[in-house]
Image (cartoon, rainbow, N blue to C red; front, side, top):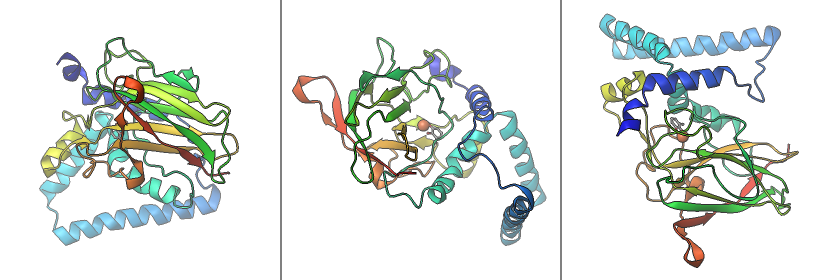
Length: 287
Ligand code: MBD
Ligand code: FE
């Protein structure tokens, strides 16, 4: 269909690269001074040595070395470094960053988050088109602290692909904030978000990441997923994703970002409403 043909790797890659360059992570400051130099020395030396080990172990040829060089150059030209890194590397960074948390499990952010989505009340419908495809979904729950205290006014930012697997602001023809919103929980930390179930996501096949996938005989799919950032005053923000039980590629996510705690099992909506509903509670770690 038309949208699929125009959602190119180069266009979504350029948008993701631009978005990354303008973002500031909370903990963005690298280790300064002499300790920082030592840290770079250690990490860069070990990474380079790990590559040397692979070359020796597999007797990598000049033809393969040149193929690697050409591919690395092209990843940048395609704007696909955010995609490559978030698909194949980020899950281990997330594992290390959040291993000390007691609250809800997190997982990777991925390349398609946009800050500043429309603020919505505790029960709300995400911005969507009049004829938005996909099974309606009511996603509801409560945000509490680790000790059980409800977190009034907690913010639940949600963003996800549509029923064709496309993200607004990274594929053409979609309204700016389609299927993106920031829901503010009520006085008891409760929220209810009306949306539609997303489709599985296929990594663009026409760019460098797609070429790697086909050259290696891998598949290009992530399971259908909802992205979330949940935050509240005095607590650590959790970045996570939720998946759908039994869905395609829940067992073999190309981005290795599924955890058992993150799999939803929606049921038909109560009271004869269209679609499904599911309850999921978030627990935030105090700072
Ligand atoms: C996605 O939608 C995503 O969430 C990740 C991690 C990588 C590529 C596309
Ligand atoms: Fe995603």
